Image (cartoon, rainbow over all chains, first blue to last red; front, side, top):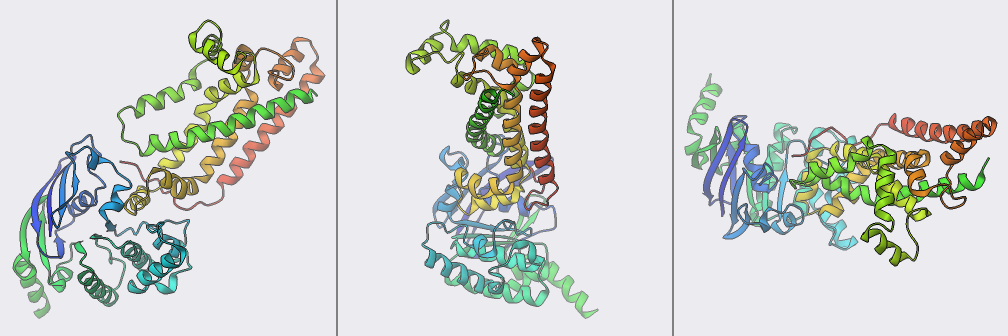
Length: 242
Length: 227
């Protein structure tokens, strides 16, 4: 269960969301510009208080406070992120270009011994379907391969809260569906709270999870995909039948 | 050629560069990644030697490190000799005078590292030291080289601060630029030519190394901006 109270201003855009996500997997759905990425960045603790203290964030995971921008200690960036065990996978992948795929995936595991670290890296790459790239460099990978490695890097550090911002946009439909199914199983097994942003109604409906509908920085609806996305579902069915 | 002055000049430049890099790398990282309201003031203060006449800086340091101030008397008591008119004094003056030449390339290099990479490293648990060691320095290595070369060259060619703070003591504070000044004053243009040519050749070679290095492609610097 994820409880969040977030507020941020970006020029004329104002994001204000306060809700409780009971489902372990939530799809954050909304058109481009609805504030999905801003919300995920605040959830990740990346933007909190970076703009002269204008942003506000209070996040609790299963009753444990992860971030409270009003508390002085919680404002500090850096190692706290590791204690929070929050991972954020973006469309851009953000792989470290000077490191190999293995070193990228193992970046968040400096506290493990060499053998354990290697095992964790291989397991995460296997899960993301990226094991064959282990010795390659990010610049030698395609967009989809990079996204797989970025996902493996996040999973390797065993997050408690996994944030995904259209993480499979560079993968084709079948590959994306297969990876998503594997990821949903893994997060359920490991009790990882996941929030995944998408603007694709088909994806959101296919996941069949709880959907948070975001519109112009506000939470417009929260509930089962079939209810929240009923208009999108009807539109998709009409398009298919025509 | 005054070999003693050449050796002293190279030693001063090497020591100053080593100290400057040790100071400028963490300072540049703080300026780029930090969120303190004092960042602009610190950056302006560090850039002051760029616009301050070297003789003015040399004069202030001479007074500060001399017996007229409590600070200067304290340093003298601690070291057993005054800092002014000594090699150590020249190092202090050179570090302050050349600080912007080390700091500014590093700030530019660190700021050019893609902000998404910094965010990713932070979320994976990297604290400031690990962030600098494993991400900023490897991705901004050319800026590090530029900072080192510029600091070295700027220290090698400094005159005003050296003259005000160190005077002209052979083997202790007489650098090549002081030797050149003395040679011109004595109308020894042949010797002055050799000294000037030596300084010119060293500077040109170091700058050529920087510009050749810049032509090689580099990963990870994408012009992303810090929040």
